[in-house]
Length: 156
Image (tube, rainbow, N blue to C red):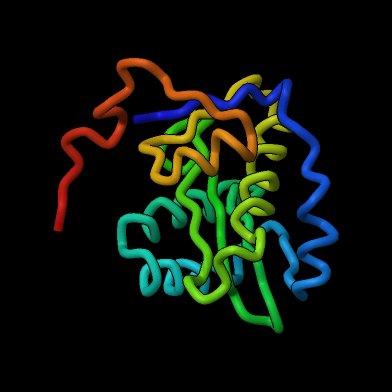
């Protein structure tokens, strides 16, 4: 099922900047020269499908992919405008670093970028952890949105 986020009522992300600083994590927009490193890491950690979507986000100008780094190593990513306009995702965080707020910080980076691009709403396609998105940004399920944009997608 897809979820909808009202970007005009997006709460302030008061937790992430301080929390990320304490954890030694930097959140920033990906740079084109990092393309292969980022998409390779995503493919290893999360699969070729997500790496393909990130490839599209990385080739936008400016890239619509944000990354989280810690000690000069990639530890997470978020993309938007990859599979469809106004869509958030995919996003992922290194399994050993989950629970530190990195996913939340990446979510806010992407959603705030969509808001700056002029979108009033964002769609989170094929939501996994729905409770997380509901709590973090007030996301709501979109009725009749399944199977959604990924229906009929080729599988390896």
